Image (cartoon, rainbow, N blue to C red; front, side, top):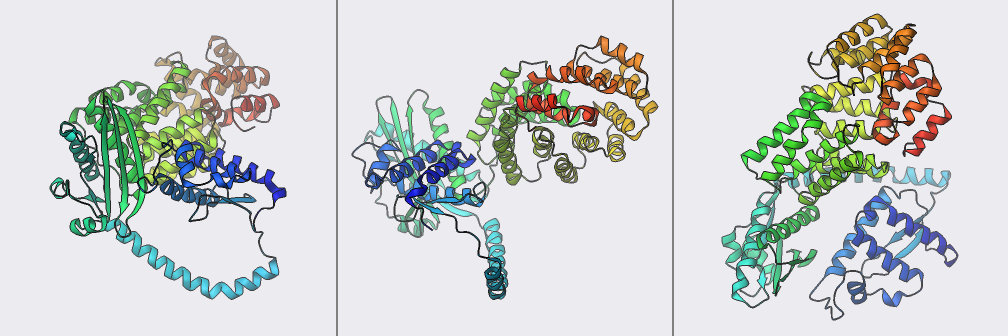
Length: 598
C-alpha cells in the first residue's frame, strides 16, 4: 500500500538504510541518483525529478544536455530499478518500507510492505493455487534449463563499430581506430562473447548507421558504438551498448582523460568499457593474455602459499610484485598480492597499517582490471574482514565463490578470515570439506580443515587429517600435537612438541606456547612456568597462562594481541585452549573493542 504522509520519517529511515547497504554504498553514482530523486520527492519537489535536471545534477552533464543524444539517465534508471529489486530480495527482504522506481518516470514510490494474509486465508489460497503452482514451476524449470543450456552453448554476437572522430582532424583518426581495435581484441578474450572481426566492423566506417540494419548485416545481437573528441591535451570518449532488436541502449559510459600517455589511456579506456560490458551482459570469464615470464612468477608465488602455508604466503609478495612489474594488467597477480599482504597483516613481523594499505591498493586494482575475477572479490573479502566490516566481507566472499565455486584458496580464506573470527566454526568445517573435495591434493586445505576440527573439539578427525599431510609440511607436528592433547594423549603431544623445539624454532613460533600449555595441563607446572618466563610473544604467554588456569594473565596477554587486528585475534580465540576464559566479561569487552561480536 502507498505510504502515508505520517510515515515520512519511516520513508527517510528506509532511504538511509538502502543507501548504507552494500549494493549502494560501493556504487557512489547509483547512491547519488537514488538519494537525489528520493529526497526531492519526500520534500514535495517532484518538479525537479525530471531527466534534464537529473542529467545535470547527478551525472554532471552540461546545462544544454540533450536526452535524445545521451541516454545516461534512462540507462541508469534501468540499473537503479534492478539494484532496488536485488536489495529487496536480499538485505532488505524484511524491511517494512519499500522504495520503487516505476517505469516510465523518475519519481520514486514509497510503499509499506503488505503483511502476509491470515492463516485461514493463506490455507485457502494455498489449496487453490497449489496445482497451478506445480504446473507453473515445472514450466519455469524447463524454460530455465533450456535458457541456461542455450546461454552456455551459444556465444553472444557483438560488433564494435568504428568510433567516430569528432575532432574532424584526420591526425586524430589513429586514436579512434586504435581504440576500436583494442575493444574488439579485448572482447575476443571473453568467453561467451563472439565479436565481429575488424574487417567487418571497419567496412562500415564513415557510413550512415541504422543499428537494426547494422545488426542484420553483421548478424549480431548487440552493437558498441561511440565517439572520440580531442581538444588540446584532453580526450573525451563516449560509448554505449545497444541491443539490436529494439535499438535500446543498455549501457553508456563517458571517459575524460588528459592526453599524457596515449597508449596507456587507450588501454585503460578499452578495459573499462569491456569490463562494463561483461557486467552488463553477465557473460564470460576473461582468458588472460600475459607473458611467459609474468605467468611463471605468478605460479611460483601461488605455489609458495600452497606448499609452505603461512611462511610461503609471507614470502610470495616479491614474486607477485615481479609478475606485476612484467605485466601491470595481469589481474590475478594483484589478487594474489592482496592475499599475501593479508597474511602479513596477521603477524607482528610487518607493520599492520602498511600491510593493510598495500592490500587495499592491490585488491582494488584487481577488481578494476577484472570485476568478474573471483579471486579479486576474495581479496576484498579479506580486506573488509581486517577492517571488521563483516557484512561487506561476507558479501565479497560469497560473490567470489559464486563467480568461481571451485576456488579452494578463496574457500580457505573465507574460513580463516571470517568464519573463524565470527565463531562460526561448523560453517567453516562445512566450507572446508567442500574445498577439500574440490582440491583433494592441496595440503594447505587439509591443514586448515584440521584447524577447524580442533576448534570444534573433533580431535580424532583432526588427527587423521594431520597425518595425511606431508611430513615436512609447516605446522603439521604442532597441530597433530594439539589434536593428541585434545584426545587425552598428553605424553605423546609433549614428545612431538619437544622434538620440534629441539630442532630449533624462530622467536615468533607458537610451539613453545603450546608446549607450555600441555605441560600445564599435564600437571607439570614448574616446566610450564619456566617456559612462560622465557616468552615474549603475547600469544605464547596467553597459551601458557591459559593452561595454568591464570585467567588474569591470560586476558592481559590477549589484550596485548589486539594490535594484530580482529581476524588474527578472533581466529586464535576460537580454539579450545581458551575455553576457560571464553565467558569472561573482559574477553567480551576485548572482542568488542577490536570489532568482533561479543
